[in-house]
Image: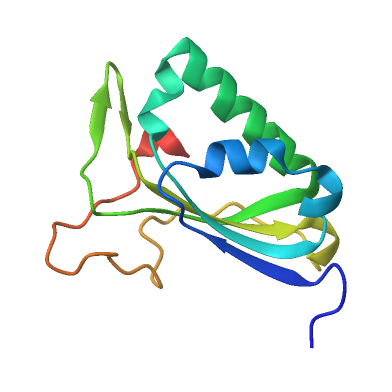
Length: 132
């Protein structure tokens, strides 16, 4: 059985993740050792309002967690945003920092050998270089 502070969160709530996570207290978030979250509308990082929400939420999460995996969902393709390509649907896995047992080295191989397409009959989407 899970003890307090050892829960796993899996979230795919079609865009509502931004407000749900922004309104969650640090105390509530600290109860999760692992969070797997699908983020929608990542291309909005290039809009002033979207950038504010996205950057503020990721700063909040990265106070307690490290990103241990990033994977684009292939339901949609990649969107060109000027000089940058962005996957609008991204899945991130976060591990609470107190659970990290060794030094993490950055992953530079995308797709990761364990990645699989979310939708088998759609074209694969590689993580755009501009996103790591």
